[in-house]
Length: 177
Image 1 (cartoon, rainbow, N blue to C red):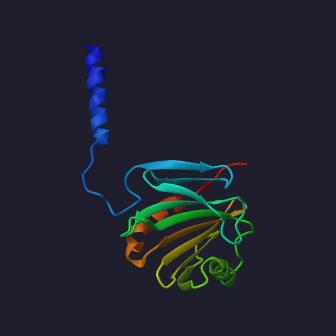
Image 2 (tube, rainbow, N blue to C red; image 1 turned 90 degrees about the horizontal axis):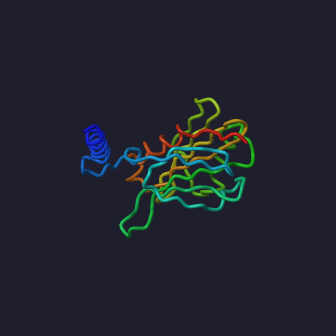
Image 3 (cartoon, helix red, strand yellow; image 1 turned 90 degrees about the vertical axis):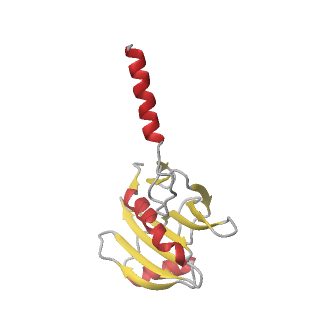
């Protein structure tokens, strides 16, 4: 009898955990999540459980053999058109806004800043766009290392994907050497 009650409880718990609303959310920060730990970059972050991960060349000024990119959304041709990228930079965080802007323009020469925020300790955020892309770049200094997080997306997807970027950014923690 006890075995059946325990089995029924486990089955009920499993059904409750798997139940969903049946609606697909535009907010990519909701839904399944997973912890990503990268010893080479020296970080851990929380990412969406269904995001596709790629290793890419580090950006100009990057350190290490790669940056990590998560593909968030596909365009009309079913090719990924929105992503979040995390990279370790070789140098400390830029000392001023102009240096931060120069660093971003090395990667995206057509980048035009529409907002710059350096009000948070150890962070600089640059919001802007190129002709076809909206970008949010955050430079974060953690434990003596500088990380660059970037949200790269078509303008029409920016607002719906920003919560996913914030989830990754807010979960970023250094991994001890």
